[in-house]
Image (tube, rainbow, N blue to C red; front, side, top):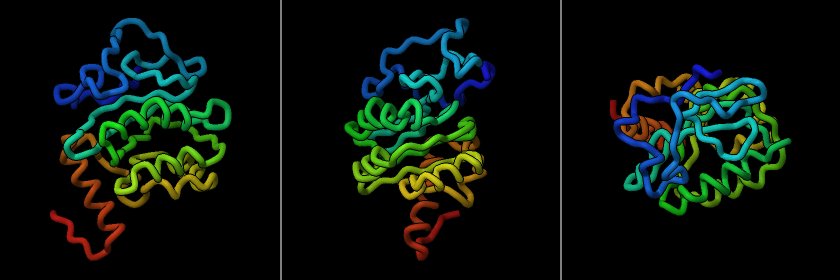
Length: 195
């Protein structure tokens, strides 16, 4: 796991540690020392620790004019033992919402498992972004099934092209526009998608 680093091709466009509006503003990273681990596996030092023992993330991009953020995750999303959704919602998402972000693209190809608790923080997140949305990209099928079994899938958009999406081939604004078209089409089947 120590070789899996957050997506780096947008680092010339955005760095959360240099964004005064980011929850990670001012954070410093080592390229040499591995300090965080998920169970007994060290993870790359570029991942951000959010106070969970098993779930780490990286804000890859935040656009306050278009009101969206792209966040990549690694590890085990564990609401049962660590209440990861509470930590995520209170310490990261709330700050982004306060800065005007209401559309979230969550990258989950490195999320290995999901363990549920109740859905209150998911419901709160959903209510806090009344004109926005949360999209799950490339989450593993068994993780999506666990979200569904827990009843929290109602708060996310996923499935179809979002389960196997080549998101890294886009620049951030292009990715957002493509995802927004998919979301609009789901809400309004008569919406015209530009090719």
